[in-house]
Image (cartoon, rainbow, N blue to C red; front, top):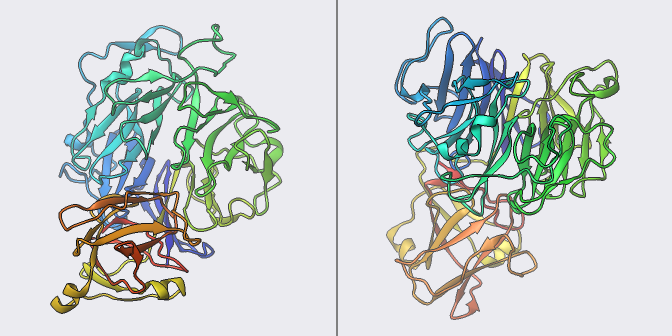
Length: 522
C-alpha cells in the first residue's frame, strides 16, 4: 500500500510526517537538527530513502546532511562529525567556493558588494542519479555534486549573465528554485530573488535570462532583461515547456520554456504571494496562496485560502474548507507547498505560524497535520510504495495476461528455480531511474509493447517494439502514476499467458486492474 512522507524544514529544526495513503492519521517525528534553521530537505526520486537537508545557522554557518535510510539516521557526506549548535561546521561537504574571482554584485543601496556564500536555500536531487544534486545558494549561484554531496562545484556560467548587476530581495540574494526538465536532461530552470529567471539548455555550461513579458513597478526600464523578483517557478513533468511563476506581483505563465511570459492573475483577490504548485496529474491545475501585499505579508482579511485554477490560470476559485477563516494572519513561504502523486493528488503547505495542512482531494477539503511547529520554511512530499525487506532482492512475479485483465495477479518473493527461469520468455530489468525500465528477451522471436486499459498505445510510454535479444534491452519510460499494461507478443500474436521474472534491485507497486509501476532505488 502506498504511503507518504512529508519533509518539513523550520527555523528551529526539521520534522518528518508520515501517513498511509488515506492521509488521515499522521505520525510526527523530530525535531532533527534542533535549534538550526533547515531551509530545505528533499528526497531523491531515484532512491526515496536518500534524503538531503540544508542545515544552517547565522552564527555557525552551513551544514549539508544526508540520510540513506529515509531520515532515521543522518551524516555529513564528507565524513566529518555532525556539528553541535555550539560548534563550527567543518569538512569538504560544507565548502561552497565560487569559481574564479566572482567580483561584486549590487547591494540594496545600489553600491557594489563582494560575493559572499551564506547558506543553501534549495536542494534539487537529480531525476536519474541519487548521488547527483543541485544546490541553490545565497549569494546567488548554482552548485552541483556528483558524489552524494561530499564535494560541490559551482556552475559559474550563470553568474556570467550580468551577475554584477544582480541585487538582493528583502530576504537576500538567493537562488531559491531549481527545476529539472524530465524530458531534456540538459535543460534546467532557476529563479533568483531579485535577478529573475534563467535557463540552461546545455547542462549548466551556459545560461540565458528568460524574463521577457515580466513587469515590475520597481524597475525604471519596463523591458529590463534582469532585475525581477521571481518568488517561485513550477512545472508539470508531462509538459516541461509550460512553466508557472509567482512573481513579486503577478502570477505568470510561459508555454515556450520562458521565451515569453503572460499574466494569468485573472480574478485573484491579490496576486502577491510566494508559492505556486501544479497538481500531480492535471497539468493545467495550479495552486497559489495570495497574501495581502509586499508590506503586509499575511493572508487577506484574516482568512487562510488556497486559490486553484483548473484552466492553467485566469479563472481562480478559493479553497477554504477546513482552513481558518477568522483572525488568521500567517504567510506561506516559497518552498512551503508541495504535492503527492496518489490518485486524487494531495496538496500540502506549511505556514509561518507553524501549521502544516494537507488536502487529500486536490484542495476541496483540508486537514491539519500538525499545528504548533516553528515557522515553516519548506515542505516536500515523497509518495512511497510498499516495498519488501532489503534481503528480498529477487522477486518472481507470475502473471497471466488474462488474469491481469481480470484484476488478479500473483506474486511471491523468492528467486525462481533454474527450470522456472528457462520457461520464462522475458526479463524485466529496472536498472536506474524513476519511470524507466528495460525489457530483455530470452527468445529472439519475442516482441513487447504497451497498451492502455482500452488497448490503445499509452501516451506516457515511449518505446519502439523491435525484436529483442538478451544483449539489446529496449528502454521504456513510464511517467509517475501512469497505468499501462506490458503485453508480450510473439510473431505479432498476443500471448494469453506470459510469465515474467522481475530482477528486483528496485521497488514497484502492482495495483488495481493494471500494472502500475512506481519505481525508485532500493
